[in-house]
Image 1 (cartoon, rainbow, N blue to C red):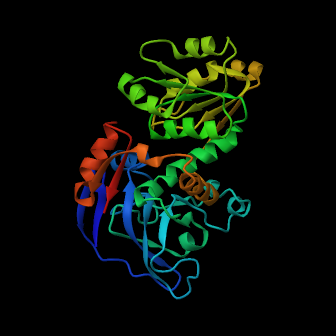
Image 2 (image 1 turned 90 degrees about the horizontal axis):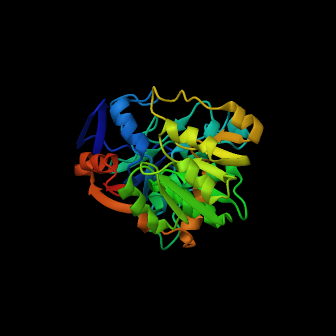
Image 3 (image 1 turned 45 degrees about the horizontal axis):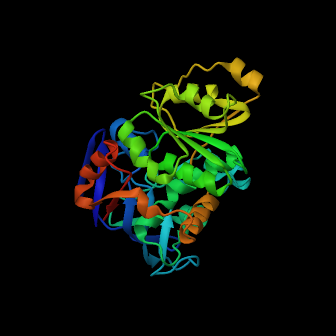
Length: 345
């Protein structure tokens, strides 16, 4: 098969490699779509302790089952399936508690397990038994189904933030996931969504997802504006959907008393030590938390929401590239030229 092989920092080569042959508990999937995530770009440039070159990256995957081992009963050839990233080990205390995204083994597609920037991807026994692998509902394209992975991460994050009826939600960051956050909080009952973004062109692109207020933080003070828009009280929920330390500081300052502040976007290596005014957290009784990845249940819910037409994932797909042009796909994603970039092997 043809695959994009990550060979080390800033090196990826598309070449022929052996097509995996599934064992009796494994499944072979013909990859039809694999979207480029920011974490793929970080691995490409900076590496990751769970990724050992040569490796195949990519974890926002959709495709078709072409072969299933004799012991596999969940899937059969011809099934259209979508895959998430985080794979519970199924045995540790966190997996037993149903929070496999906190699994200390921390398996993931495109990390320890080969990913989707290839013509075929092998699902081993752990992925088949415990992983986020679900049949794609009728009427959903492979490209749309691949984006169930990032949407599942959004659902996990907002579940932790307890978004409720009538809430005002401030979203810092207008990338694809920030825009998914805006749409999802509407479904959860938020009455007002305030979007903050440094780049004016990106902010204008994100207007299609319907923020009530759009703030360009390179042109005005976002904290002052959010406070102005909320009668001086602040937002009920603040979600940082970007890799900015400054946004995390702003999030604390623009939060209402007893607000939930979700540090959803991870920070770059070497920039994750952020100075926060903990007296603000103390006196406002703020709930500050993180959110990482998703569980299989969130991936399934994401597919259900897409199938029901509650989110139109076609609006998130701005670029498509064949596997031979995966370098261009990474460049387009890294250059923030549009929304989600999809590779079609």
